[in-house]
Length: 335
Ligand SMILES: C[S@@+](CC[C@H](N)C(=O)[O-])C[C@H]1O[C@@H](n2cnc3c(N)ncnc32)[C@H](O)[C@@H]1O
Image 1 (cartoon, rainbow, N blue to C red):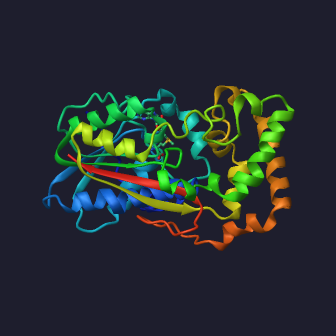
Image 2: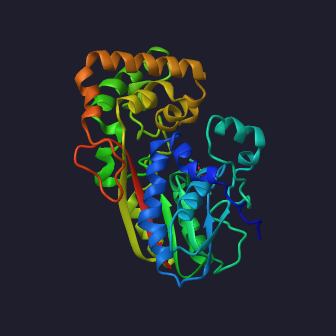
């Protein structure tokens, strides 16, 4: 069905570090997928078996590269081939990829199959693992359900599904660890951002409600479903031994400043995801966000500084109390 991955040069070993520069959430995802799902599944296989992994939503191949590179540095693991699928044809355009990756030592890998996770043009019982890094929360409920049925179809018996996702999905009791729930963001920053949007006629509390990311007027993607729904849908698709564990990328003040004022992708993903807010010119959004952030920091410096007083290490499979950042649920299920 697809070409094999290239042979990696020693520089490939640096990919993981280069990749991690982009986003701590991605870094936590890869580590957690490897430790909680992929490596345990591979260790259960007979020695000498050559293993096919299918990655859905592979984008420009960062996660495929990082997983492959990390696995290659392990002893006693089988020979691995990762096949990448991605529904968005734009992601295969060279200029887009080059712009995204410039300044990184991560190598680009094209998706081999252009298809969404819910309709895979792949034979049944074809692969040992289906994996997805930071993909599931971009699907609506129906797409997620169908993708689980598809994964079940393409997996061999005893095969494993592994998804790492994000706090845009409703994490139930773990929501409190998401940085948007930290009092600095919730009670200082967001009211100031709402005031700026209101002054410019982009928000109306009486009509739109309180400006928080989980208000669909601000972000219709947030909380479309819960981790409990995911568990149920996996069960309905025929999976068993369903295990959902939380990992964590804690945010320090530098990361929070970026997410609240300078990182446009993070701002749009969390706070400006509705069509109406997306339509506001980028410079205006950046300016409102930066002004709100600076004013919030001046009003509550100690609350802001509290981001630096928490554990700063990525944790795998557990979350420290009172830690705020990007919780990463890792979903592992067996056919
Ligand atoms: C945040 S990116 C992650 C890309 C890649 N996995 C990585 O970690 O570098 C999310 C990806 O999910 C893809 N995606 C969105 N909806 C999807 C669907 N229904 N099926 C498969 N992939 C989807 C997007 O096109 C995008 O490439």
